[in-house]
Length: 71
Image (tube, rainbow, N blue to C red; front, side, top):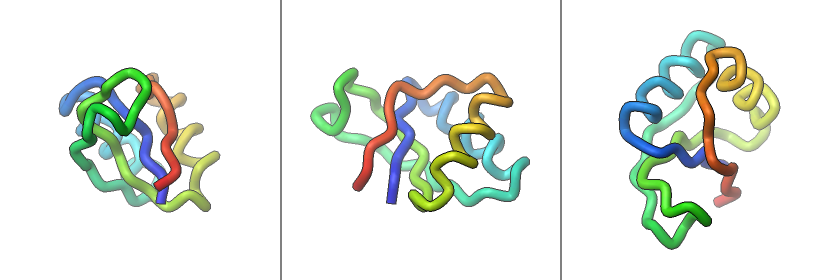
């Protein structure tokens, strides 16, 4: 599984909606500060096989993530 780390719960909700608009599955999760370089608090978890589709969906909806973490 992969996680796109996001700055806030609001961005996580927007990311989940963006993925749904492109028929992609995503789950909002809380991140521990040490899991990311920027200490982001929330993330959207998705199957890594959909990495490029998820990046494309978030880009098209103008949702910035700080990094992708491979769990």
